[in-house]
Every structure is written in C-alpha cells, then in structure tokens.
Image 1 (spheres, rainbow, N blue to C red):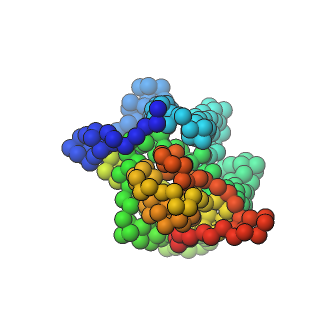
Image 2 (cartoon, rainbow, N blue to C red):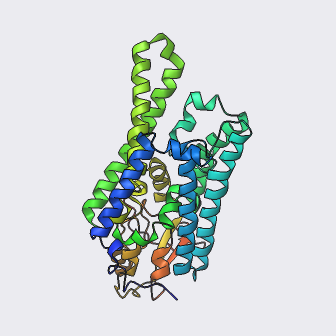
Image 3 (cartoon, rainbow, N blue to C red):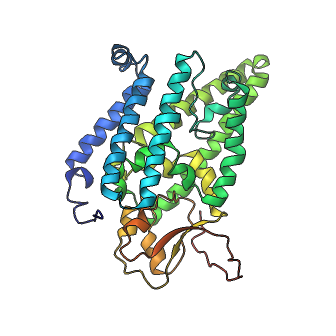
Length: 356
C-alpha cells in the first residue's frame, strides 16, 4: 500500500511537539559528546571497538540499515525507491564502514571510499595525501574534480546525494519520518542560496590555505599558526557542528536535509553542475490537482506543487533526485528525466526554475 499523508502530522514525534523537542535535544547532546568530548571512548573500548569513531560508525550504519528497512516497508512499492535505498545502504555498509575497518586491521591508513572533496575536505590536505597510496590519491582527485562533475552533468546530483553519500543515506532512511518538516518558504530558499555557497567558498579557501602552509609554513611561523587555526576551525564548526550537531540533531524540527540543503559543499558543487546539466523533473501539462503531496514530501524544501500547477519543469540546484515527489503524486504528473534541452527532433523542452 502507498503510504499516505493522513497521519503524518498526527504522530507526536513528527509534528514538532514536545516529544520531537526532547528527541532533538537527545540527538544534539549525543553529537556534542561524540564530536567534542571523549565520553564515548570508554564504552567503545569496552565493546572492543577501539575508539569512539568506530563506535559511531557502527551506530550510524545500524541506523541506516534499520531506517532502510523502515523506508522500504513504506515506499518499497516503487522500483526506483527500492533500488536507490538498497544501493545507498550497501555503499554505507561496504565502502564507508567495512572497508575502512579492514584497512585499519591490515595496518593501513583508513580511507572512506564513498566520500570526496570538498565534502571530505581533508582528502586534499597534503598531510593526508602523503599518507595514502598513489592509486587512492588518483581515485580521490579524479573522483572529486573529473568524474563527479561529469556524471553530475548527465545524471544530476542525485547519483551522489541520494545514491552514494552517507549523509543523504541517513536522511533518506532513518530520517524519512521527518522529511515533511523542511521549510518551503521563499525566505528559506534565499538563505539556502547564500549559506551553501558561502560554505563552499570557505571550504575552497581552507584547502588553499592548508596547501600553502605545507609549501611555505616552515619559513613563516605566523602563517603556519594561522593555517592550523583555520584547519581546526573548519573541522570543529563545519565538519562537526554543522554536519553532525545541526545536520542530524535538527531532524525532528527542521527535516532531514538541513546539512545537505544549507551547508554541504559537495551539494553546492553538484548543484551548480546540475543547474546546467540534463537532469530535471518534468511535469505533465494541466494534470496537477494541487493535492500538495509532492511539496510535503520534498526533503529539500522545494515547493514542487507550485511548479506543477504552472506547468513548469523543475530544475533546481537543490533537488537531490530522491524521487519522492513523483512517487507520492496520485496522478503521475511528475517524472525524473535526463534529457538535453532539445529533443532529437528539434522540439525544445522549455525548462523553468533554473534559478539557484
């Protein structure tokens, strides 16, 4: 059966009620402890997991697996959703959890094969590059600078944000009950456009500063101190507070894609590529009945209904191609498509909503 909207706002955990605030506080407290204290080091060692980050990886992966099962029970009648969910969970289990642990057991530097620069900003730091085998360095650079932008042009950012990335994977699985809480207002959209590209700019500047410090830091102690401060600040604020404390902690109040929507530098890069690429959500003309299911279920805060009612195809940089808007549409108005701006026969596709 197709999961509907009738009880979405009736469950205490899903309507920003007292239970949601308590759960939010618990998540925020957990992330503050895991990122900024050693409170979980003892439990991790007692469980034989080595350190708190391995414990966190176990909890994160279990949350995605359990969330994936939950999601498939609700939306598994869609082939697209089945394949997408199984894929993103498998990537987390194998590439972002099991393989790094195997590398540590074998005495090698761990590497998370599903994360790339600028999301995993340290993978472009010289100190990290020099510790990795040549093939992994090539894999990281080609993936970040060549393969991902190219694939993003043809398939849209969905190939990473909804099919590979663990941040998006948690949002689409364990976070599914909260997707309707994303802010669809014009003000939120304006803030999103300002914030996400600001963080991207900061990520690029931080990478450059750290690289310069490696090249000239020995001769300039003051600059070296400044560079280490910038690197540490980025890790604590962007890598920890924004991605974890707020990115996951605010699920019960602001929806599941707070980090992806407002701060993820990888989403910013792929969004720029998608804006000029071939991926879009097409709309069947004069078919929308304004039920609002599509907008309600959009985790990225896009008012899809407004585009459908205006017969406008959706080509927003924010769209992660999760496909839920098309999945919950009762009339099949929406379709995820990859097409050039002109068909082979020369009939143009009029694409609206190309704003950032």
